[in-house]
Length: 425
RNA sequence: GGAGGGGUGGCAGAGCGGUUGAAUGCACUGGUCUUGAAAACCAGCGAGGGUGAAAGCCCUCCGAGAGUUCGAAUCUCUCCUCCUCCGCCA
Image 1: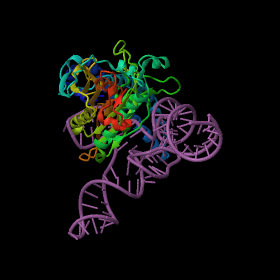
Image 2: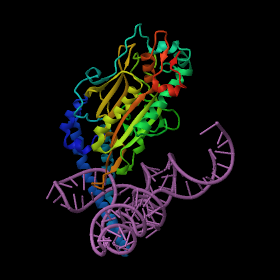
Image 3: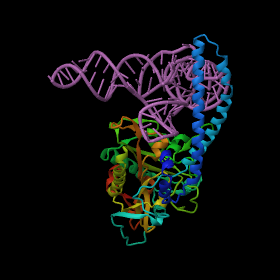
Image 4: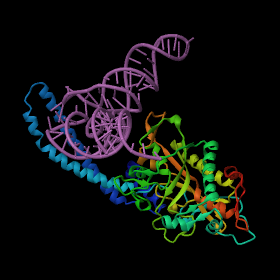
């Protein structure tokens, strides 16, 4: 959520910044609602003051043994008037608040203009895509051919489309990736590993920005409890700081978390239907930081570099792009995507998305720190990114490590996690 | 699942329906004292919002929501949550 004060005083500026995200801020409606709000709120509070004063004087008069019937009589009209005004005010503030919850975050100045994915700007490339002396096969074909590999049919039988079963060595490789990523981030990058609930309440999703706008993307439980399956560990992990005032010397907070992620993928019918690029359930190691506002730019750079380290150690060619305004998500101020090379598709595909949110999530969550300079609680900045998406990393390893006979070379850093084996056959 | 007891400021912990946004202690900040520190003493110290150029003034908040009342931290109801005991269970 944006600062209601700023949106009021600088509506024009915010509106033009939001145009970069292809969002049209309804300045007129906002101004109208707010001027109504202002009148009604001042009125209501004045009336409340009146009531408080008189009630107090009743107390005093009673204590002094005086007759209170006259004051009591003067109170008669106030109550109903106050009730009406309060009701109106509540409605108005709800309308205003509901609207503000649907306004996206302002993109950072460094975010390029653009409408969609095709306008994202490449910033860097690492590694050289390997050329194969044979026709490179895609991961689904490779995985299904392995003796202990991928089984999409079984998953469809058990559940439905967009799920996968991994068996034997392939399941182990998947697990090895998780271990390797967590070890790297905790031992080398200074993150604290956390293990969190995979079911969350609506408040948490409101805090990180998935609700109220993106309910359709989520799996919601039926039954007594209104819980949702997490679409990313970002939700439970970032919400660790919800309603907290963090001590300045505990910052920055850096968490690494492995979790499954559940996405309904509504509206993506027909996209990436083959294989395990786009699943209803996948696993991810997520990096989350909560930092002082002045540190958030450098924290995004650091976190992105932390994710890149994984790709580099796995020797997977990738590129880094900055998302243009139109492609930057609702809550984000700035996003870098890391895209890994997939030989079968002859292009780079997203494997990590690293974003800074400025105080957008923090304001929704009331996540604060105590600034020693002012002594006051102030909003934190939050940053998160995948480090990395495990399923897609597996895909990349299968495709980039394939040999002509269909066996797969296991990256050196993973061999220790795989009982020393070098080849998946 | 059953029975009982709690949820109050950063923490601990008082609080009769009425000048209580809340005693007290700890922590924290500033000051006095000291060569310095500690101790002692003095003072300050919750959050959100409105209005205002500012000082200030006002509103709201004692787990959440509803209710009773002129007036609710205090009374009633619902829900959430924590603890103890019993049952069940990986």
